[in-house]
Amino acid sequence: MTSHEIDYKILGDDIQLVEVELDPQETVIAEAGAMLYMEEGISFETKLGDGSSPNQSFMNKVFSAGSRLLTGESIFMTHFTNQGLRKRKVSFAAPYPGKIIPVDLKASGGRIIVQKDGFLCAAMGTKVSITLNKRIGAGLIGGEGFILQKLEGDGKTFLHAGGTVIEKTLQNETLRIDTGCIVAYEPQIDFNIESSGGLKSMVFGGEGIFLATLRGTGKVWLQSMPIRKLIQRLSPMGGNVKKGSRSILGDFLEG
Image (cartoon, rainbow, N blue to C red; front, top):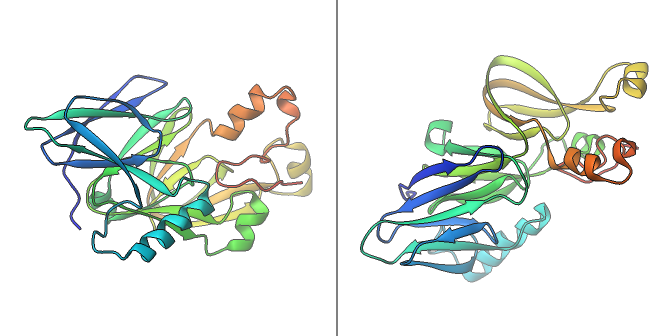
């Protein structure tokens, strides 16, 4: 299914929202509860799944939507359609402070891999599903989890990240990253979890026992303030919360 061609504008600085302009009969899909405001003429409907396969059977829709429960997301998505005769706007905001990242899926080969709660909204026709980290053991041990989201299509999609967003293009390179700071990456990039160094560094270095690694050629998007870091600072325990105990991609304790 070809994605709808939507126009958009990102508003704000540190707490951003995306305003999407829809032509008549254009549709944008979004996570349940993400809508901030919408103009007259736009209708919305909560549905099972993303609507990327209109001829999909009911049971397949239930299975596809149910798989989203594994990422902690709602099984429902909201579809916003301009039923009017002129252009109308609808906007979406993320649940915590940060930046909104517009991604052209066509320019990224039609597919990207995203952290479990990084998807905000997308043009109708975008397929939202889950994918498993091939290194399940590494995902569990490193606190990054092994269940991620996969976005496929040829239109615009919008991600959300905490703090400042860093976009990098790797050229057959390796990038070592604090666990939880990965927002998304192109599928040709190899994702893994590795120990952060020697025993002394792991115990006293303050960087945690594990680091995430991205290897290969392609784009990656990183965030400076994952939600678990924010939770640590706001927690009454402050810095005593174990580093990595609340990763944005998984809830496994590093020990």
